[in-house]
Image (cartoon, rainbow, N blue to C red; front, side, top):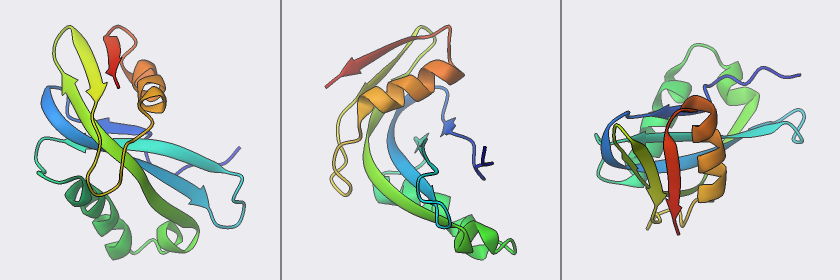
Length: 120
């Protein structure tokens, strides 16, 4: 079992915002990969969310984050998060559509009491 260097889910917990899926792959063992999601209302573009994720990696003194792992944004969309439910929908002009079913599976782990819907 490999330790992935990042939480699988890091999103705002209220509002309507863009999100992306990032595939993280171990360079030494490519079969070991994980999809994570990142989303925030602080960014107008999906690309800005990705740059915000990559920035600390590139600046980190822990070079294993860069040398041992490969990162690729594999799609994006939008999330509407309110007190009763989470709605996943849309696409990214920069990265194309995310697989919203995977996003739903990830969110169900982190928010098991929320109703999570897809609008594809």
